[in-house]
Structures are given as structure tokens and as C-alpha cells.
View 1 (spheres, rainbow, N blue to C red):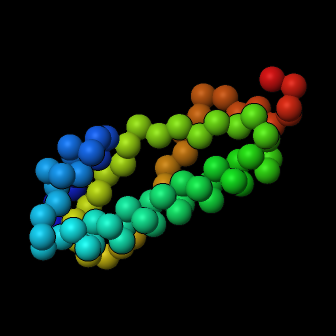
View 2 (tube, rainbow, N blue to C red):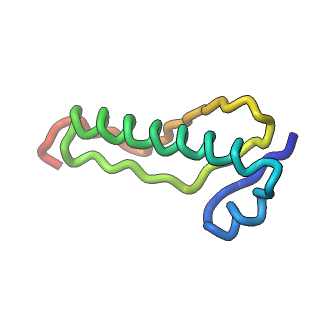
Length: 81
């Protein structure tokens, strides 16, 4: 099992090969679906909400698990900001 920090397309190219590409694509789709769900939920709470990411870690284990971590210096739920 290997872990890869993904920040760029080059990172994706470097961590995938013909043997693990399907697993990566399935996991990447799950990551994108999770991101969009979180973004939509955040916007429903505060239309000015911003969701930022600094990439993700892909674990090449074939399990297709997704873990999301939230970090915030400030949460502002009123629309007056």
C-alpha cells in the first residue's frame, strides 16, 4: 500500500500506471463528488462560503475509502461578512 500526495496533474501521472489507473479514477470520482456535496452544503448555510483544498492524499489500496478533514481558522455563518 502506497500513499501519494496529489497536488498537480503531474502527481497523478507519476502515481498511476496501467495496473492502478482504474482504482485511482474510481477514488478520484469519489473525491470530486464529496467536494461538490460539501460545497453545496456549505453554500446552503452561507452563500458566501468558500471551500479550498490543498490537494489530497491517495492511498493505493483498492479499498475506495474517502476521509475528509475540515480545518478552519474562522467560521462565520451570518451573511454580513
